Image 1 (cartoon, one colour):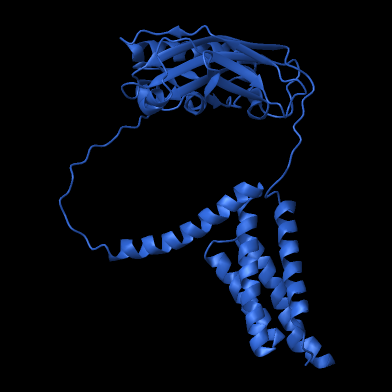
Image 2 (tube, rainbow, N blue to C red):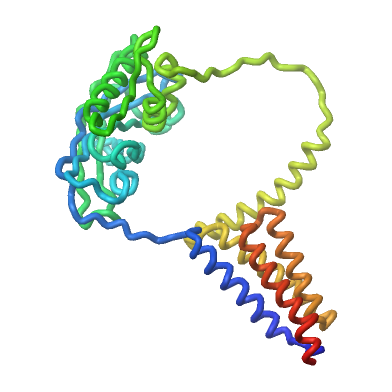
Length: 345
């Protein structure tokens, strides 16, 4: 039987890795898109912005507003890729928060709602003052416009803290009714009449939960089903912790591996899955080379590689589909080495 040297083994491993990376990109695992829109909107407007505090918890703050990004011809790419909503402290120029619009109707263009939410810890950490002067801004994505359009306002109507939930409820209902009128040609219904008053339809719940964080908890009366936080009494009991310790030990090993590869992926701006796959293939190659030096048996080395690739998939360290393709290729090579190559030797 012919013996293949270590250089050939490395070439095989390199080919497998190259094919794996190609298949990952070819299947849409990571794409680079050029989202360029040459035309500015026909109208870019913040119609109003309103502020509330002490809603979900004491000391939190919510800004809710309504926008209009009007196009006579709707762009191909959704508003999430073309515009950004920013909340800025004009005194320092510091951006306190940025959010994307919700691409719900007409890809998010035309009229819509936006919101910024700060919990008590964020309000304290960023020294945000209820009733202060702040800037709400819509800014075009620099990757989407040669010269990004912008619009901003410092006019924020601060609702009284007393009856704040009442004011927010009325304001959200007003926005929903205004959007129903604006979206009437698309037959979008956001509100329905129930025994308790106006409530969200399924479409209304879907839209406003995406726009306003924690809205179901703040205004449960607008939802047909609400979420409450259960309060359980603490149980004084002692349980065996052996299983927990075992799982923690496994998760710690895997967590270190994933965290390290994620750091590398961030550093080199590539998908973490590519880094983990390359790292596992390198590790497998080193092990396979060690077995080849010891045994000089190429078929045995290929079987070891196939087992190592399968192990990587089972441990969820690399993509299972790519591992399956790689293992299949190695299996074909083993069959060729065992039967065809031996018969021709």
